[in-house]
Image (cartoon, rainbow, N blue to C red):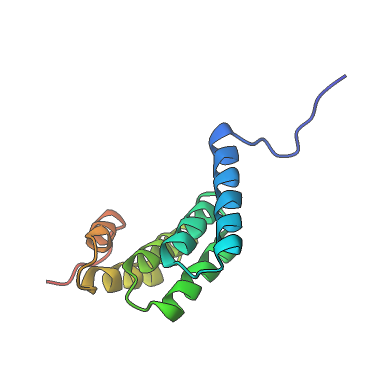
Length: 118
């Protein structure tokens, strides 16, 4: 008897799926729109290549927290993976200009070949 797999799932992909499920459950239980939690869920979705859902969560965070740099960075990474380099670079640039934010926006600008303003 031959065992056939439609979709091979690696251990890391399975861990991401479980992490996403735990984060989704936590969100449903707390009913709080914690931007860090939403971005963590979106990050899992991005790593699992669930781009539409990940983008939707980034947009949700940015509607309520327009200065949340992690949402811009993640949305930039997603757009970059989708081949939308101009949109990605714009998000990385926006993240890099948010006061008090980590330097991930500037790092992503350089790493992904985006033009850097002086």
